[in-house]
Length: 326
Image (tube, rainbow, N blue to C red; front, side, top):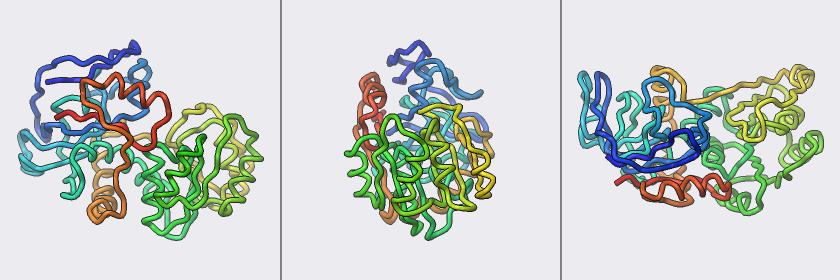
């Protein structure tokens, strides 16, 4: 099978690998679409190794395709079913082995290649907002890096839940594109800023947020602690701007605010199954009726993987970059 190879030496290559066989409780998926994520860029550099049980050098945290074979003890999803889901790695190949409980049925109206850019971002966004932050209808959500895959999912889901959404980005075009998804308040974030001033700008645009989905970290953290509403919840999903920020603990205490950290990839089989089940319960019906949809910047073939990685690394995309593995 054709497979993208990330050896951890900064290179991306494509080679043939043996087609894997499913074990007990597993399915084999003939992959159609596989989204790229920031974690793949880190794995390419050797900084984010795959968890035990996943291919060590085939990246890819999300997939969509057709069930090709079921392992012992698996009857659903049946062979021939269109499925998508998250995995610990290995999705950027023609075939993938995953636990059956991590696969959800793709709605008929969603293109199967584009569906490969849905699971990681929508499961992450839904888990952060609903499971971690306990988001309720009518609350105010702030999301940093609104033009990212997870950012576009946060906007769509928050609007579907009846919330007000403020988003930040470092380029005006991403904010403009996010407005088309329902973004209520757009803030252009300078590359360097003073957290207190940034917090004041946030609250001037829609008021204090009840929930913050932070995909950036760094100096954004003290700003959001300053801006958060009393009883607010902050969920740290990414650390592109730095993983060791100064946290104003007194402000966190005075507001009785909560701060959560979350990551999807290294979770146990059961934890990922629970996140998948929550995604199926609330998000898949929204995909089916069109309330939310995948935002795709560009699709590449597997043989174009090196160019796909370069595009994602350039940080100019809005939404997902996807590999077509057909």
